[in-house]
Length: 538
Image (cartoon, rainbow, N blue to C red; front, side):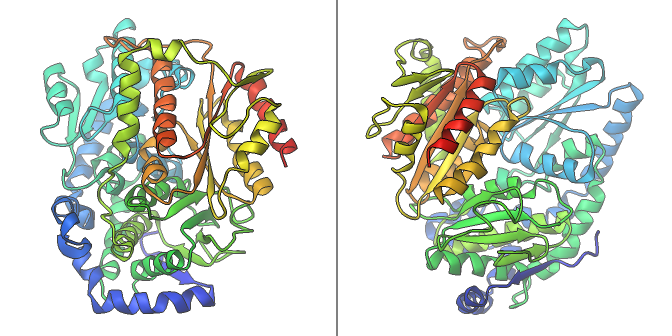
């Protein structure tokens, strides 16, 4: 796998012709070598201060080497104590990369990037005697991750287990989480490079520690990245990152601001979910950007029938409708897409290292949690259709059946716009919700994204507020049969989940975007009813 060739193919002749001048410009400006040299001036004066502390990802294939021995030593210690079940509490870049690494290597890693009480309860129901919790957060202030830490610490203690011995921390030096870990005496603290942003952190401790403890070969992953680094830093028209960024930039200039991602036999599991955050959070700002649309495969609606507003990109060989394709090992692909995204930021004239609109939804959720009465009272549905409570946006009457409301809501999408389906549900037990994406894409002709809440808030959530303002948003929330208290906090996990949905919806509404919320009073029955309504709403 280390020697697998890293390639980018632009198979569409028109797109290749449009990209060629951008390739020449990037090569003449020595952009690739300047990225590799961590030149913070590439994205303009406004971005320089941020870029100056966000470019260490270009050398992680070297600087992360000492982690290999540390992770192996801790893994051996844990296994000698009969501890071999790894649970990861992390959001965004702290969960997406290790999940891809573990899935690709076929090693078991339980990822908690949810506030759904049922999904967290399922993780708690595993064998705690064999469990270690990896708490992964740059600051430690991430509310979801802090909640998981509190819940698991109490569960360990309640089962007679020394919680401090079963908690491993990955964080930035000097963070509040680092200080807490020292105070509580947690088993091990891994300090990540603070000059790497979360979405570029796949090859830092955030990506490597959980996956490595689960059994992934992280030395090989770093070898793969190292083999790719030289070509990705070269000022050459054959540089795969230059070609990929130029293709994205040329497509965007022609009106194709969506990038549809499908795996076509790469051998990598779930790569599009990782790339989704990287692209959306890096480029979706100042009213512009690239919207990544992750789909099931090259035959999926949105890829096979992509219109002029979207570019189908294959992760793997060129297949079907793909206009661009990338091949290479996982470590090489991580570095390729990071280089390409940073370079695309220059072409789009934005700062690819900040996320100015992410905080808005967090602030709105915190406001609701500060006054829990807002979560439990005053919510009157526009209509109720069996197991679905309908909360219709302004401009949608909401007084008909569920299929009528959906039909009216979908008609609010502007030409060339997109539909975002946001499911604040259990992504294991309520997995059938993901089937809504292809159904809606097929029936509406809109590019349609699907995100599990609050996971997507740390990913495409930035694009929703900062990118092209042509989206409409279908929120799905659900009743919780059982809730979980968050120790030493005035809210439950279910209340936090509800606050995150309402807070994000509030921010989107304030920005003039239509948000239809459907609350499932019975999740299984409500999802079945919703699928029927989608099929009737044509």
